Length: 159
Image (cartoon, rainbow, N blue to C red):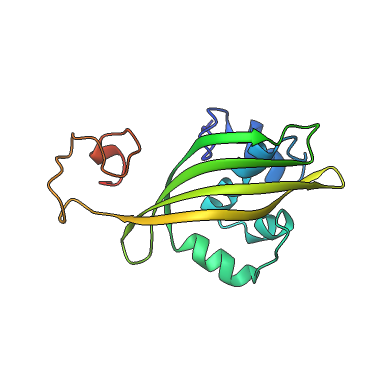
């Protein structure tokens, strides 16, 4: 029994898998946000497209998602997006390593809308930064990771 990739602390089978397998609809924008992160980590482009107002080429989306090594999702803030709302925002920070071995910090304020009782990703304000790696800066394996995750470097971007 493994905790869900989304960082909720719940088992995958009791969290994002319920949504990505279409057993349940996410009741909140935050649940949708977490399940979309899970879908990026697992390369589930079909779910990403189904839960997005703007559609993308699923093959390209899956290739991009699978070319990255997903490290963590941190929820920074949320506004509205509860089950009785029709809109909501979730601000989050994702850490990943891209196919060029660059450590990336992606911070996004996402807007979600509800259509026919289903939450959908609408738009996002994005800030992306490349995080220097150990060979570019002086960070010890036991120092806090420069990406801002709060973890030791050896347990985060130094893996």
